[in-house]
Image 1 (cartoon, rainbow, N blue to C red):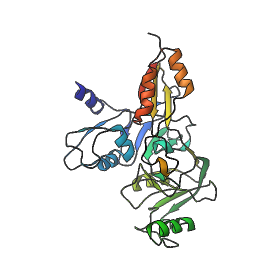
Image 2: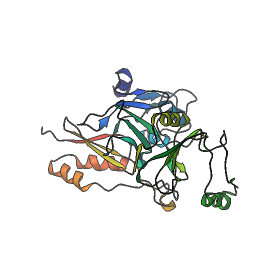
Image 3: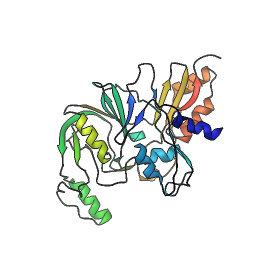
Image 4: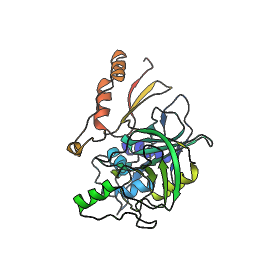
Length: 308
């Protein structure tokens, strides 16, 4: 029965569609923040988790968090892998590009077509963090060149003994990939761009920019215009109070602030309002706190506002 319950998302018609380019959702209803379903993938011989993440266009860490105990490089054939495509929308205006650093996802709210597309991303590594910001796209560049900042060239030389050129021309060796969207924030040094590497999406790997898979950045590049709104947030815990009275929590691991926290288990403190509400309404507080500790990155039901 347990295996059958896991297979149900594959057998039932889904409320979202997975394509090679994006995970597309219908436009969010005004009274709900919970969207999507979690399909189940059965591991085939020779597959590893990065391949599965790319197949469903989810982040590598997101897939690992949703499937603790599964070997990322040698998963046993026949293993049921939950693909984290159900989620709680962040508390933002549904307009333009929204990036949630903590969940390593980019949301594109297409108001004209009334569709929502969600992509996994790579963000700035520790010490070169991607900043929280409200900004817009200031420039679109196809086949961009890359001019590494002096600070990055110095870092590569001192820490990796690698001499970066002053300018990297467009082409297969360019780490920006084939398309780039410049953000108006600060001096304009932050980009949403592609990559020439197969690995790193869904991880903290960049020098501060937002990195997307090659097909994903082409899709987004063609959709957006200069002036498109961009908001970058850092929201590791999201809560949804649904129309049927169900309360869900989606918890992600908070971002490490420095190297001393790298690889350590970072816990999120309970939100006082949610904690108090659960206690006042005699709900399962321990389930809420367990969801914060597990950090599966998937919505977990923690209560119901409808009295029994």
